[in-house]
Image (tube, rainbow over all chains, first blue to last red; front, side, top):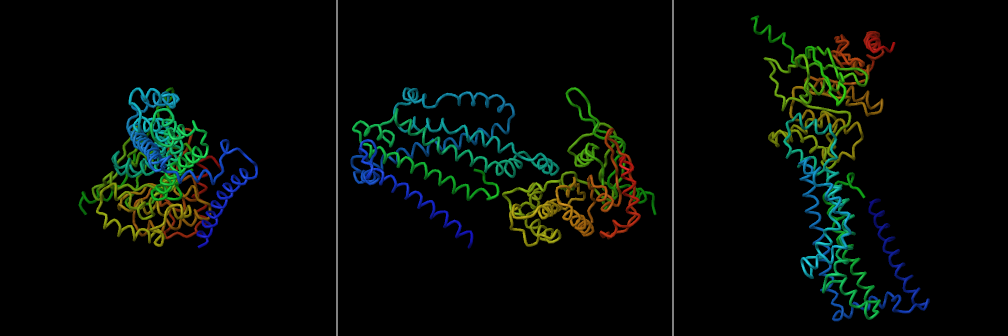
Length: 256
Length: 262
């Protein structure tokens, strides 16, 4: 009861502050006499939504969402799988973890032109750029989580002759889940950035491509709307991750 | 009475003789424990007391089969009471070590799952055990919803779920506040009485060792060795009044003296 009221209060506050920010933006443009090609008003920005034939919002948003979601979930699968392999084999970990950290030093954005040479334009290379930019945080947090088991707990199950598989499925993996989610939350933001950069340089569709198109005509309202749609894609993915965390991780174990 | 039964009667459940353990570092060796010789009868509650670094945890881990030893013999189980190392050990540590994401009942069931015991029976047993440790209303709670003392009760239930013959406890109440600790001592004596398990209880609390144990093993540090092994001739059931009695004081003084604290 009390908790419900507290949640309601929080949400009302969140919505009020967001609306207030939009209103302040509108007021600034209306009363501040800002040139619309420098800074469009929120109403003009939202008005671009009606011209869906010009902007193809649905199609472009779907394309961007596909590269963000594709790159992100690929990173989750590859990151977690690698972390599991590394936790099973000390040798694999010692041999390849340093290499992966070195490779991570490469500015992923710089890979864009190379990916064009390898894979041509399109969704595929963009998914790869998003993936390459966001998979390391997942690998690192998962690796840490899998190793974060109290040695005495291992003693306890060793007296019961627990197999490695039992230790992995009953203790290590569920124990690593909060760590995996904390890595995923960082990765969402990076995946969006990666996908958009990919669309700037190597794409013929998607919100990033759309921004480059309308920039030529100084259509700032269109660019702003594209940014809002990109943000919406990121927020949606983040919300999915939060929801999954709520379902899979007990409250006490959640991390930020 | 035949000689065979006489032997079986004379044969204790646990027998350690001249046990010695050395940890080998890169440069030097470190004597973890030496001269450990004691018997534990079936159903006995033996306290092992000593300062940090005296090797009491090492002895416990040797009993648990987690550590090897250099010298001496360790035998658990007798003709009368067989011992299966995989199924007959229950452990309780200073930290409850409950899995955060499991409800209390599923935490208690963990050993049964690992051993592949029939789960219907194990669940029924868990119900009784939670009642015995005073957690019957908390089966569906998560560990974070319980106090430290309650978490440790759950850990004790977990150590009993596969019905092991031997319970090894490593300072199980060391992280609790003084009052909760006294309460848990009384609870442990009751649980011990009801379950009839053999318990080896490691502690650095001298009063706790005497209050709980039917026998006390004293270990000293520097060098790490066993210094004493005596019966505590105070009747069960024991209550907190016992601590004011002269005999109780005599036993604790005997340990203080051995540890050079008199």
